[in-house]
Image (cartoon, rainbow, N blue to C red):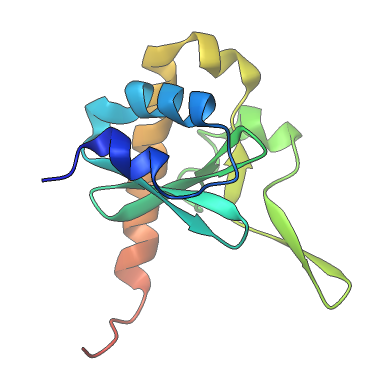
Length: 130
């Protein structure tokens, strides 16, 4: 089995290794954490479910209608977005408050809520035939 740290370091991600290593250590209590480069950003996965994204050394966590109230503090920052055909498209990933970097237990609590949201979103998506 591959070491989880290898999963983070070996993905050629746009986030700095120090930041991703730090997040790896913080999020390990959730389960098997991996990362994968996606759309010029880094997807953060727990047991195969994408709970967050890293862009420019900033963590954004998955938000859905059920978790929006929990993440209210994060709503003061713009959500992760991208431009398509001159239009900005907001994604359902909100930037964590900077203070969480110094509060590991609360960071994990936020990540647990994001993971639950990600699982709900994943459950609603139709499965592709193999």
